[in-house]
Image (tube, rainbow, N blue to C red; front, side, top):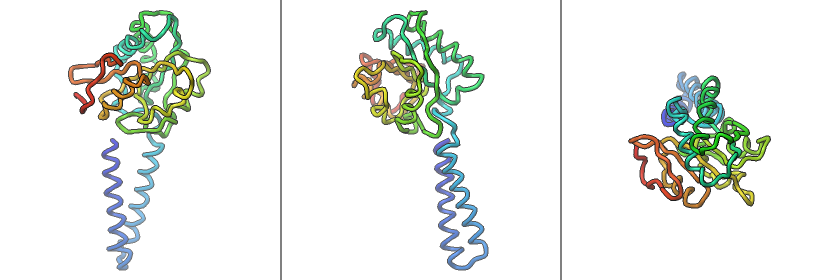
Length: 234
């Protein structure tokens, strides 16, 4: 969707320039109407790009019911060695998983995390989507503020952040990493183009578990089992 939007914006920009140079400047009757039309189109695209998406995540970051519990279980497995029993978790999810899908996935995520951590006593203290208007995943690099704002609003402290909508490209700037003892972090990235970034976060200890969608299925990566840094395997 992003590539198509940029293509439309580029076409509108070309149209705007053509309308001005070949139409308005030469006094052609069609110049001004076309110029206005292209300008309005560009503004509409820009507004949609900034706020029309409605929140974090991209459509292809949403999880089917079949995958939701498996992803959660894998993330739980990756976090297991880093957490004490009865851990408190905070969950970030894609806006595309909102509504009725969220109610179902909420059950699947809880069951999957409990199974992966082998701990039925875990507590999920909150759920949120990244702040509306920000592009939050490696597929479309975002800003740490998109994630930091809902985390700052969390009503309870948590031992781990579990994100089903990736991390912003500048994750190092997130508020959770600005404290002496950051929570553990596990995230699902779909099929990110920038696998080197995920690998780097794992190596630096910013990320304890990452699930990627590979050609042969969902795969869990940890600091001990790093993904390749080349193009997506999908």
